[in-house]
Image (cartoon, rainbow, N blue to C red):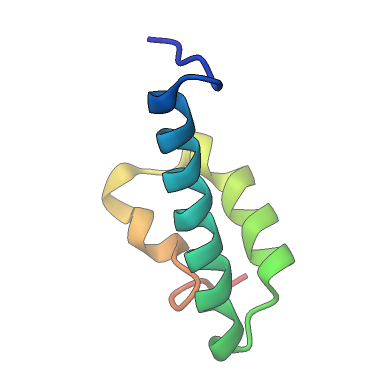
Length: 64
């Protein structure tokens, strides 16, 4: 289902996604993880990554 970004529901989904992304990026900083490197690597790995191992991509478990 496509969401219209100008609809109330679309804006809510966008805000939630942005909040999750920001929280993960901020979580990388205390672990001395470069947020840009972590995000780029994680986004590149997601398409081929096993769902059962997705926790390994979290910033505090990431091995760059």
